[in-house]
Amino acid sequence: MQESNQRVATLEKNIVLLLNKLKDNHYELESLRTQLDESKSKQATLDQENKALKSENDSLTMANSLLGSNESNATTKHKINALIQQVDACINQLEEMA
Image 1 (cartoon, rainbow, N blue to C red):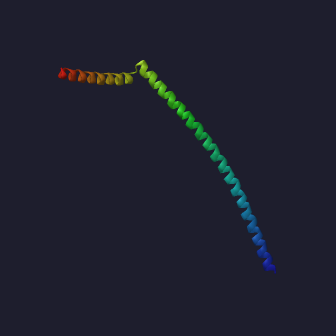
Image 2: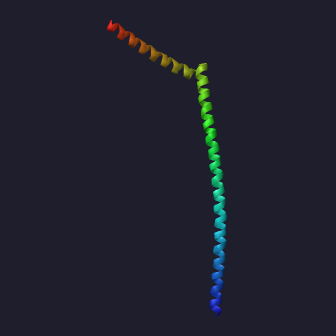
Image 3: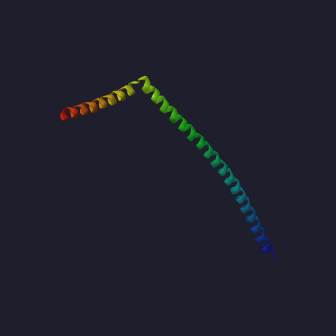
């Protein structure tokens, strides 16, 4: 009888320990869910900020090209030269037809 009381006491102790672990796991899970929600919110905010910065960067790049930065001048000259070559090719074709 003593032995079975001891086994029951041991089982009760193990059950209490398991319930405590379950409770701790539940609190940990809730904490992780909260952190996940916060991270998702921060990510959404950062995504919006990133889009705004990309838009601002595009606007600044356009403004720099209008102001004539060295890089945009080279690009503009390249485009103008390509257009001149196309016009020359058209003129040559017209001369050949005539």
